[in-house]
Image 1: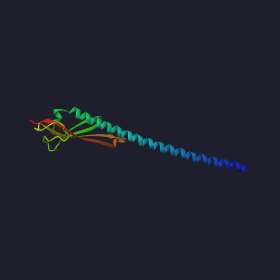
Image 2: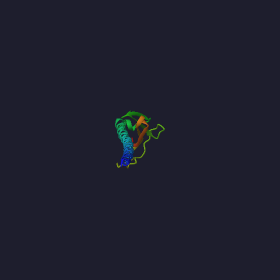
Image 3: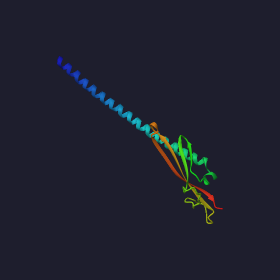
Image 4: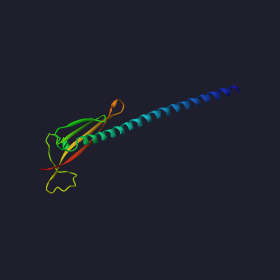
Length: 144
Protein backbone atom coordinates (compact mmCIF):
# COMPACT_ATOMS: atom_id res chain seq x y z
CA UNK A 1 0.00 0.00 0.00
CA UNK A 2 2.82 2.42 0.79
CA UNK A 3 4.41 1.79 -2.61
CA UNK A 4 1.27 3.04 -4.39
CA UNK A 5 1.48 6.45 -2.71
CA UNK A 6 4.82 7.04 -4.36
CA UNK A 7 3.42 6.09 -7.77
CA UNK A 8 0.59 8.63 -7.48
CA UNK A 9 3.09 11.35 -6.57
CA UNK A 10 5.27 10.41 -9.55
CA UNK A 11 2.35 10.55 -12.03
CA UNK A 12 1.08 13.81 -10.60
CA UNK A 13 4.55 15.37 -11.07
CA UNK A 14 4.65 14.16 -14.69
CA UNK A 15 1.19 15.67 -15.35
CA UNK A 16 2.32 18.92 -13.71
CA UNK A 17 5.45 19.07 -15.91
CA UNK A 18 3.38 18.42 -19.06
CA UNK A 19 0.89 21.16 -18.15
CA UNK A 20 3.76 23.57 -17.42
CA UNK A 21 5.29 22.88 -20.85
CA UNK A 22 1.92 23.45 -22.55
CA UNK A 23 1.50 26.75 -20.65
CA UNK A 24 4.99 27.96 -21.64
CA UNK A 25 4.38 27.03 -25.29
CA UNK A 26 1.08 28.94 -25.31
CA UNK A 27 2.72 32.00 -23.74
CA UNK A 28 5.51 32.02 -26.36
CA UNK A 29 2.94 31.62 -29.16
CA UNK A 30 0.89 34.50 -27.77
CA UNK A 31 3.98 36.74 -27.58
CA UNK A 32 4.87 36.01 -31.22
CA UNK A 33 1.29 36.76 -32.31
CA UNK A 34 1.39 40.09 -30.49
CA UNK A 35 4.68 41.02 -32.19
CA UNK A 36 3.30 40.15 -35.63
CA UNK A 37 0.09 42.11 -35.11
CA UNK A 38 2.13 45.09 -33.85
CA UNK A 39 4.28 45.01 -36.98
CA UNK A 40 1.17 44.88 -39.15
CA UNK A 41 -0.39 47.86 -37.43
CA UNK A 42 2.87 49.84 -37.79
CA UNK A 43 2.84 49.12 -41.53
CA UNK A 44 -0.76 50.31 -41.84
CA UNK A 45 0.10 53.44 -39.85
CA UNK A 46 3.08 54.12 -42.14
CA UNK A 47 0.85 53.73 -45.21
CA UNK A 48 -1.68 56.20 -43.83
CA UNK A 49 1.10 58.67 -42.99
CA UNK A 50 2.62 58.32 -46.49
CA UNK A 51 -0.76 58.93 -48.15
CA UNK A 52 -1.44 61.93 -45.92
CA UNK A 53 1.98 63.40 -46.66
CA UNK A 54 1.38 62.84 -50.39
CA UNK A 55 -1.87 64.80 -50.18
CA UNK A 56 -0.20 67.54 -48.12
CA UNK A 57 2.65 67.87 -50.64
CA UNK A 58 0.15 68.21 -53.49
CA UNK A 59 -1.89 70.78 -51.55
CA UNK A 60 1.18 72.87 -50.67
CA UNK A 61 2.28 73.03 -54.33
CA UNK A 62 -1.08 73.34 -56.06
CA UNK A 63 -1.89 75.78 -58.81
CA UNK A 64 0.71 77.62 -60.85
CA UNK A 65 3.58 76.31 -58.73
CA UNK A 66 2.70 72.75 -59.63
CA UNK A 67 2.01 73.50 -63.30
CA UNK A 68 5.27 75.41 -63.83
CA UNK A 69 7.57 73.12 -61.85
CA UNK A 70 10.65 72.27 -63.89
CA UNK A 71 12.99 70.74 -61.30
CA UNK A 72 12.61 67.95 -58.78
CA UNK A 73 11.35 69.18 -55.42
CA UNK A 74 11.78 67.38 -52.10
CA UNK A 75 10.00 68.02 -48.81
CA UNK A 76 9.62 66.39 -45.41
CA UNK A 77 6.11 66.05 -44.05
CA UNK A 78 4.68 63.68 -41.41
CA UNK A 79 8.03 62.00 -40.67
CA UNK A 80 8.51 61.04 -44.32
CA UNK A 81 10.12 62.25 -47.52
CA UNK A 82 8.16 63.47 -50.55
CA UNK A 83 9.62 63.96 -54.03
CA UNK A 84 7.83 65.73 -56.88
CA UNK A 85 9.40 65.04 -60.28
CA UNK A 86 8.20 66.79 -63.44
CA UNK A 87 7.84 64.53 -66.47
CA UNK A 88 9.78 64.25 -68.70
CA UNK A 89 12.78 64.36 -66.40
CA UNK A 90 14.99 66.41 -68.75
CA UNK A 91 13.96 69.71 -67.12
CA UNK A 92 11.73 70.99 -69.92
CA UNK A 93 8.09 71.91 -69.39
CA UNK A 94 6.00 70.10 -71.99
CA UNK A 95 2.29 70.38 -72.68
CA UNK A 96 0.70 67.07 -73.64
CA UNK A 97 -2.86 65.93 -74.25
CA UNK A 98 -4.75 65.04 -71.09
CA UNK A 99 -5.42 61.36 -70.55
CA UNK A 100 -8.40 61.71 -68.22
CA UNK A 101 -9.97 64.98 -69.27
CA UNK A 102 -13.73 65.22 -69.83
CA UNK A 103 -13.54 68.86 -70.90
CA UNK A 104 -14.14 69.74 -74.53
CA UNK A 105 -10.87 70.61 -76.22
CA UNK A 106 -11.77 70.73 -79.91
CA UNK A 107 -9.61 73.79 -80.42
CA UNK A 108 -6.79 72.29 -78.31
CA UNK A 109 -7.18 74.96 -75.67
CA UNK A 110 -6.54 72.63 -72.76
CA UNK A 111 -3.32 70.69 -72.27
CA UNK A 112 -1.75 68.92 -69.31
CA UNK A 113 1.59 68.90 -67.57
CA UNK A 114 2.55 65.68 -65.87
CA UNK A 115 4.35 65.15 -62.60
CA UNK A 116 5.21 62.12 -60.50
CA UNK A 117 5.07 62.38 -56.73
CA UNK A 118 6.38 59.80 -54.29
CA UNK A 119 6.05 59.72 -50.53
CA UNK A 120 8.19 57.42 -48.35
CA UNK A 121 7.64 56.56 -44.72
CA UNK A 122 9.65 54.29 -42.41
CA UNK A 123 8.29 51.95 -39.78
CA UNK A 124 9.25 49.08 -37.51
CA UNK A 125 12.03 48.47 -35.07
CA UNK A 126 14.99 50.74 -35.82
CA UNK A 127 13.02 52.08 -38.85
CA UNK A 128 14.07 49.06 -40.93
CA UNK A 129 10.82 48.96 -42.92
CA UNK A 130 10.10 51.47 -45.66
CA UNK A 131 6.81 52.07 -47.47
CA UNK A 132 6.62 54.22 -50.61
CA UNK A 133 3.47 55.53 -52.29
CA UNK A 134 3.82 56.81 -55.88
CA UNK A 135 1.17 58.80 -57.75
CA UNK A 136 0.97 60.61 -61.06
CA UNK A 137 -0.50 64.10 -61.43
CA UNK A 138 -1.88 65.80 -64.52
CA UNK A 139 -2.24 69.55 -64.11
CA UNK A 140 -4.59 71.11 -66.67
CA UNK A 141 -3.28 74.32 -68.29
CA UNK A 142 -4.57 76.61 -71.01
CA UNK A 143 -2.59 76.81 -74.22
CA UNK A 144 -1.96 80.37 -75.27
